[in-house]
Image 1 (spheres, rainbow, N blue to C red):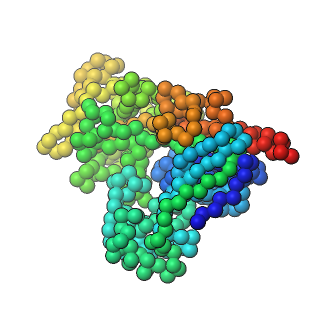
Image 2: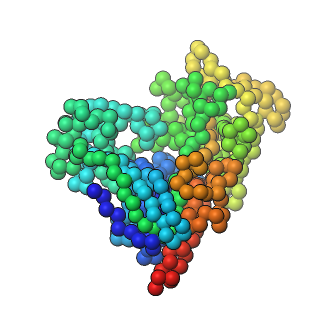
Image 3: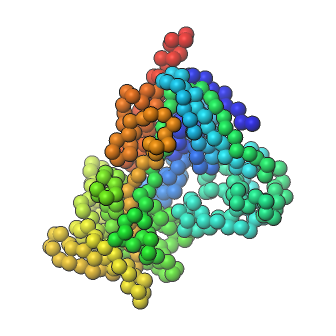
Length: 427
C-alpha cells in the first residue's frame, strides 16, 4: 500500500506539467510539505513534447533537467505519478483529498535498463508522439522521463509478453500483481495545474483532418521536427516522401464561435518557430506559407516575427482558409479561400498542411471534485468562492511557457499564505 504523510499544512498540487512542477518546487523550497499528483507516468507535461522554445529556439531539455534535479533533491516534495484526484472534501485550511493510483506494474527497483522493453514484441500507438509512432508494451515514456521507470501496458497482462518482461528483469522490478488503489490525505490548500490539450482538429470539418492524411496539427508537427521524434526530425508526408511546400493555417478552431472563443496566444509564435524547422530540415528547398487573420507578436516577439518576415522562403497570405480539398492524383491538400489584402481567390496546392490548433483547458467542470468558478472559455477564474483552491498555468488562461511559470509561482505563493494562516491559528 502507498502511504502519503500529509497534514492540513500540506499543499496539494494537481498536475505535474511545467506549471504544476513549478508551483510544487517553489512551495517545497520554502519548507512546505507538498504532494504533487500527475495522471501521466512522468512529470513535465507537454513541455517535454516540444522540440524548441520560441523566440530563442533553445531546447526545453535543459530546464527539464534542472527541475528534475530540484525535485530529486527536495525531501519536502512527494510525487505520485499515474495518479488522479477523484474527490476533495472540506474547506480552505482543511481539505481531504482522495487520489486513485493506477498500477505501473513496475516498482521502485527499476533501473531503467530497458531489458523488459527488449523482451516484449507487442506494440501500441505512442501517446507521447501523438500516435505518429509505436512503442512497446513495456516502455519508457520518453528518454528524459522522470521518474526514470518503465511502464507495463495493462493490455499485455496475461500474455506471454508480460511473462517475458518479468523474466527479463534482473532486479525484480516487474510486478504483475500490482493493483489499483486509493489513498486519502489532508491538505490545507490546492494548486490546480492540469494544463491544456490541443483542440480536436476532427471538429474542424472544412479542413479535412479526419479525411486527408497530409493534414496534421501543430503539436504533431512539433514531434515530427524533433530528431528524437517518430521520423527522426524528417518532415514527411504520409507516404514517407519529403514535404517541401508546407502550409500553416492559423486560428484553426480558435477565435470562432463554433469552436474556441479565445485566442490561445501561442499559436502565431509557434508557427513562426516551426518555419525554422522547415529550413533546418530542408534548407532553401523548404517553403512555408502562413495563412493568417492577424499575427499577434508583441514585445520581445516582434523582432522574431520580423526576422521570419524577411525570410524569402516564408510567405504570408492574409486569409481565413475557407476549405481544404484533396488532389486525388498525388494526395496534396488544396487550400481554397480569398486573400483579403487583394481580394483574390486562390486554390493553392501544398505537400503538407499544418493546422495551428488552439489550447483547450483540461479542466472539466462536470467532473471537478469541488465547486469552482469557471469562465465561458473553460478556464478557472480567480474567485473567492474557490476557497483554498488556486489555478496555475493553463488551467487559468492560455499562456506560453514563460508566463505559465510566472503565474504558477503566484499560485504557489497564494497557497503558502493559506497554510501559513493555518499554522498561525494552530501555533
